[in-house]
Length: 374
Image 1 (tube, rainbow, N blue to C red):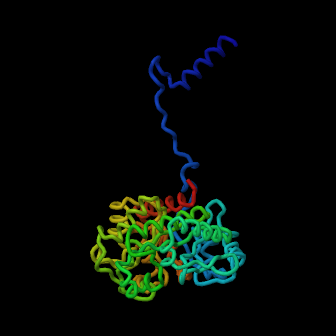
Image 2 (image 1 turned 60 degrees about the vertical axis):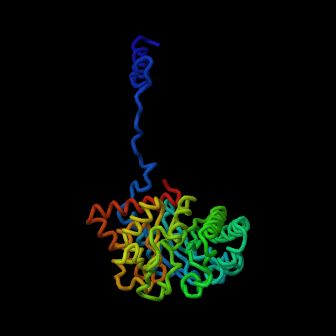
Image 3 (image 1 turned 90 degrees about the vertical axis):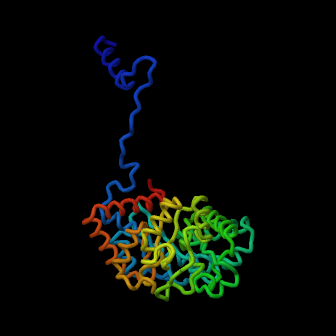
């Protein structure tokens, strides 16, 4: 080594060591953020907004409005709705029409309602006949985990990656179930006490996870005290539930157990926010769920495309209000034809208002992290 090259080598060593003095460690170096650890890096506003929408299609076929939402507006997911009895192969064929045109770098959530009993969208060869939640709640949590693992694997084999289940709404008593159309009317409840619901919800989620499917618990802050169904009735109101109610305690426990996604109810809760449905309420979504309960996962709306409860607002208002309230995913399941105007309205507002754009970015980041992109 020449004298000049020896000096150069020493200089390199000193630079790499941070010019540290003897006995003192080199100064810490803060990593510079790179595209590799920012899931939004390189995404346009349109692509970021697209991640905030899951759009419905009939489970037995790919609807053109939904295909368009995936192809032209790069939505983050599709929802298989209704009832399909063709089995796993037929479902996989429907799913394949969407995944074939989706962005491979940001895979679709393919969602459905596979709760059991009267609420099981996908049936036929390859899909087990699932018992109702009431029956599931009568089994041990260990047994339910085993069953849910098999059900999750069936969904995954058909290309379904998200199950909008389990239902964790707390009906105050067995006698009250008959006067509760959305939950008790379909035997969607695991039981009538916080501990039992939480134990079986955790078991169901653990099984779905083991089977390769993401779960979404629903419907915050609870539909156990309403007397009408938001799907087909307007003005559905809960006058009982407060921040310290047992129905909210279910979610405290689910959050502590690590649940990744929660669906909002669209009922009005007079003791929480009498001015708006929970899904449009910053006081309920951000104030209660995020700040008081500490949930930082993905918050999804219940259907805001065709539910009677939200028809007083235009489709574009529903999408914007949900995101402003703190929701991350807008579910457009019943009426996919309104998805385009919803998405376009959110894009326009994000381009015009920096504060709203920041909400979009936060929501899109949560969605992409739930997809495993980080």
